[in-house]
Image 1 (tube, one colour):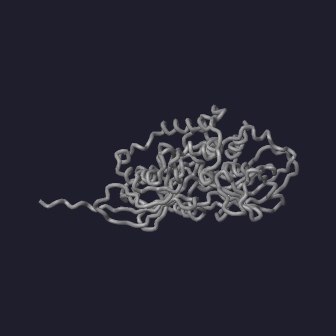
Image 2 (cartoon, rainbow, N blue to C red):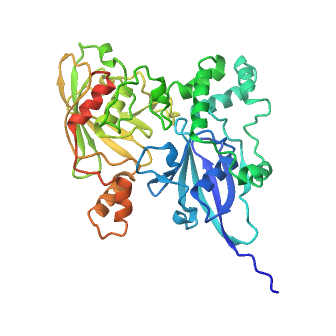
Image 3 (cartoon, rainbow, N blue to C red):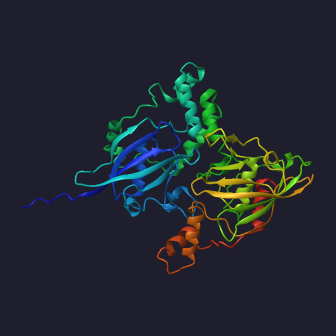
Length: 455
């Protein structure tokens, strides 16, 4: 009797690197090409040494693939249903994997090699360098603070940190052999590491309560992560449990993603001028624009919120203002990259824009690169304006992650051609109700009133 030959399996060899950190934290690993994106997510958690504690997603060809149990976005696709080789087919092809949406750990994956093998039953870690950051350490900024404290080893903060991390934590240590032992374990093969949504919510809530009691560097680093973020609605809806007034509902406003600022309008200097600003999204025609009225004394973080609301963005990405060759950034989430970067949290609009006809730039989502030109079109002296108002505008905001001006235009062209082979996919991704020509000024001002706590 002839022995049946083992069928060769197509194997993908990936390089993965954690973005924003130097020296780099990277790995090389292999996985069967026909496994699901969920299997790939599971392998990444192990090979990087994350702990399956937070939500994750893949960004491939401007689509988001994640676990539908944890997202309310209709455009997100179920990563259990798609195989890796459905999208990734050529060497040097790259895509993104995001883990922990609040801390924002972003990874880039590159397909380095494709092989055919008969004895490749498990994922294999080939090599790598440096330990993964600890879970819940505060993102890039918190992790960098941890490294600085570890380097000193003489402060009280170091002792507090070691109690949390353990004496064996070494940011320079990585052992592929230990990872491969996990890949062949029963726990990994049967996906025992994964947890359901209720368990995940319970853990997050417990950590929030614990952090309120912590002092020293541990509490500071964790609060950098939680207390600056929990006031925004996240994918687990914990926000609603911690909001003081959670009995107010807005039935037709399910896209409102900016956290309300209770009684914010009561704390405004009414002796300041009002600015009429014209905001136009660049590199798109016909123009997508808004005209708004704001207090000239408005802080840039508040102006960012207002722009997100009036344009129709979802506040999913990083942003910056640019004026007079200075980049004004939120240092809670951005590490300064150059001397021209400045923390914008105490900067007011009138500090960087004061002459009629002058303009500044607001960029949102550095991947897609949505640039907004903000022109000061009119100054109304000492108008006593307490909160921002949208005066007029035209056309709908592009969907999030639509590929920037060029990618968005391609999608519009496909929607205008029902014979295009990608028509159904793009229609499903953008939603049948999406109308690029629609702008509802009443809904925008309703959202602004909610933001300012005005009934």
